[in-house]
Length: 252
Image (cartoon, rainbow, N blue to C red; front, top):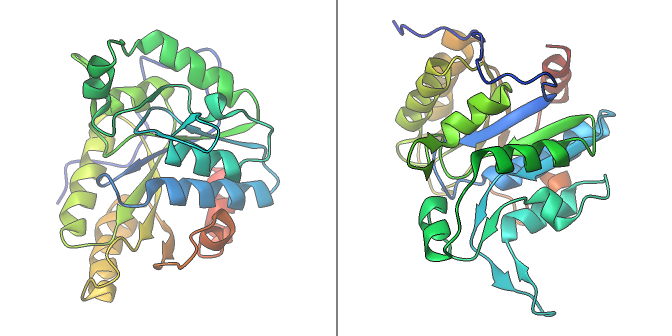
């Protein structure tokens, strides 16, 4: 029996103007977290919310045809939003090297400033009435010597949505991440299963174990199971999300 409970504890980092929406985290890197965030952007938008998707930090840029430096995740979220956000508003802190943010910052001789980043995120969130703020990598990625993405989630004081990349090891990764979320006093609002490995065996059994550990034990429902899509556009992802559960999340 787990010692954790799915309840939102008092948060010392709560600000006078709490954000409405969700913090999106994942069981690991490269599990389709941004595709799911883009799909959620479209799904909540279709439910009448003015959604601002924000990639809190992004590492890894390439030059486009106009020689501008672009991050793929930021570009995807920018394409999904309908609030007239700029690329910099969607991705307030970007680095060129595709590696852990604290390493990318060091390579560029830049500092990740906690207050400046939180201020920029809140400024971007103010473009709408409902923010989807995506972390980077898994739940505990270092940003500075004494601040990581779990601390970022606590600072933002938002309910958390967990993207579970369906591949070998996903049950362990999901349950450990859920424990870490709850240990920080955050509420796990729900989770989305995303098919990271199209050749994974025993998908139904894995989903059953995940539902037992997350839905039944913690009261965090599965918002949808997204298969491997030939074109993972925001609309295509949104079609695999459960609208009734998203409506319930809005009411909560």
